[in-house]
Image 1 (tube, rainbow, N blue to C red):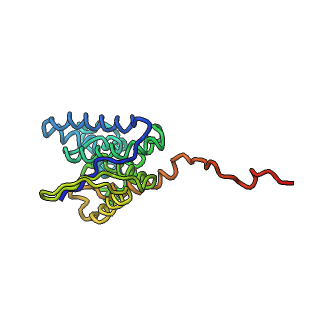
Image 2: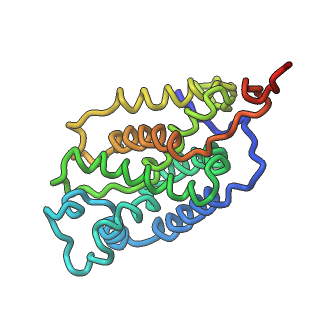
Length: 239
């Protein structure tokens, strides 16, 4: 069974330049990465991935791998992906949901929002085991933040979902609160701290990113003034 969102019915008036730029950069870096020799791939992941033990000072990279300060790996790790499905899945979600959040916040605030949620996601994963030497890469933590924000702002927006089961396939239109609520429920259901050192899916990062997105969008969105409402002070006194 295959279940995958691929579009929404929630148009924007402005082009999502920041979201498109992130998609372009991640895709370009991956194309360069995927055709490298294995030892070069390992060096890239170790040098630019977020390694908890290195980040918190419990371990050090060898001299030839020390390219950036450890704290910057929180940012650089967001632009790296380990495989085609990892990249396509993340970039599709950003393409679907990022434009609406970018338009709501504006470009500058969206950049801040994206990196803050991505950073919180990375730390959520790292704090589970600060001695872990397994690198974490991927934009999924930051994109989880975008999903959390979308759920808050547009819970009733219709999401187009491709469903495939053996020979049956169909496109459904499902409300965002069902799609995204189901997504975060699966993350909680799948989370197991014992799997931290397996090098698999970083569910804690997804959960941390999503929660930070829910919180930050409420703090960062512009508060619109209610128009057309008549207050008692606006009515002239009658005589």
